[in-house]
Amino acid sequence: MNLSDAQFMAAAFQIRATEAALTSQLSRLRDTQQWTGPDAERFYTEWETDVRGRMLSAAMKLEALSLVPGL
Image 1 (tube, rainbow, N blue to C red):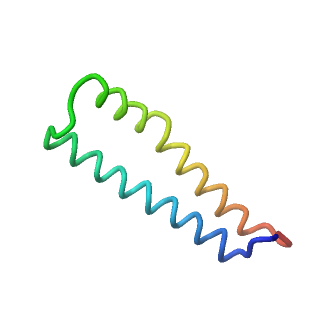
Image 2 (cartoon, rainbow, N blue to C red; image 1 turned 120 degrees about the vertical axis):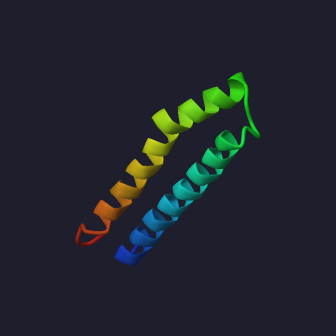
């Protein structure tokens, strides 16, 4: 099954929206100190240094695929 350009863009949009929502929630947790401690710090660090970037990279790849003719 081939995806349309619009489907690639919709998937990229959904990933970006999810990333933004998660980043916002994590910032709120950190700022209000609702989740603290070593596990929280490890998660916040991993989110910022790895997971968030992977999500944004996936969105960019999907956007690039939407520009490839014939997919």
